[in-house]
Length: 106
Image (cartoon, rainbow, N blue to C red; front, side, top):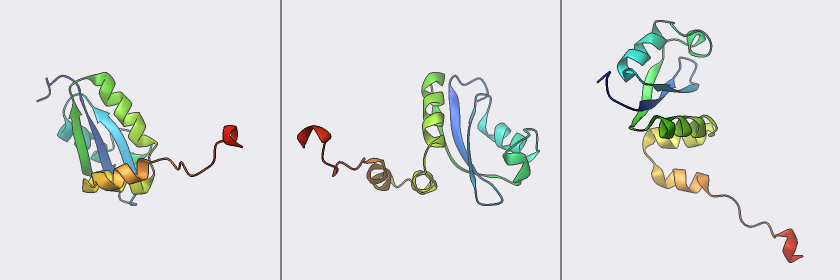
């Protein structure tokens, strides 16, 4: 599957309970193993071992990158809803509060 076009977006749970979101173009299992081998300095290398908790493949790399950036900006609660596959909670967490009156109506 290393020749598969597009990319996987994945989320790792680190040994300290934090989450890391990344992308892999050349095989998801390989990428997770590289993280656990400490190949990548930085965030995950200081929090080993890591465990894959969520992943999705996107045929278009630009879509994959957009989703990766979006998830990186999410709260921990929202990331955990994604991990659980709780799409109802994701919808609820994504709703913006519309209870504030508009300044134009005053």
